[in-house]
Amino acid sequence: MLEAGTKLVVASHNAGKVREIGELLEPFGLEVISAGELGLPEPVEDGDTFAANALIKALAAAEASGFVALSDDSGLAVDALDGAPGIYSARWAGESKDFALAMRNVEEALAAKGAKTDDQRRAHFVCSLCLAKPDGTHEIYEGRVDGALVWPPRGENGFGYDPVFQCDGYDITFGEMEPDAKHAISHRANAFKKMIKAQFGG
Image (cartoon, rainbow, N blue to C red; front, side):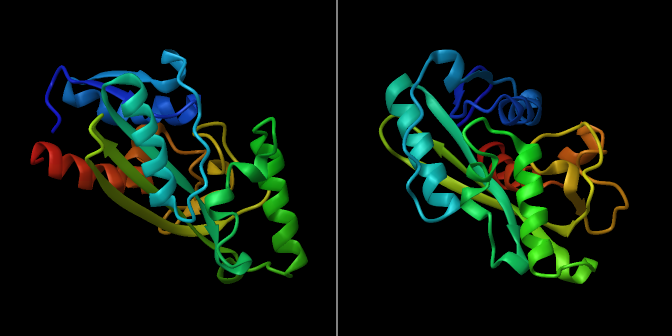
């Protein structure tokens, strides 16, 4: 489906997410543009899974632009909070998309549960990618990475909940990792590896 020179719309208005997806796609010679740059409206994400919301966004962008569209629906799932914030990860940041607030909200919810040890603070990031054509055909690829939450937040890199997420096997947060290091192991990277293998055979 994808070839070098293909115009690809990243179905997101989140600058951090668009930047990270652009970096992951850079080696493949695609012409990447975001839904925000095209002035496309944000569709109502009323799916009940990451995959369902990714599909809504990709189809809306592909149909509105006439180009192949790639969407990403991703978020943080905390075991002690029964998987919350999950598909509502962005909503925990409020109207202003303040992820300092979102991280504080998660920490307060964990504190209310008495979660103090790493075992009690287990969490994972999930990413569902949807690649859609204007005719409605689409494919979905999913990735996940496991770890635990730290407090206070650490690091200025990444975006969203990255400063409080420490991946298994590492002693620094995603917020402290250099982008290349995070791109090698993240939930988004894992989903991308599946997509790249399917699309480019790599």
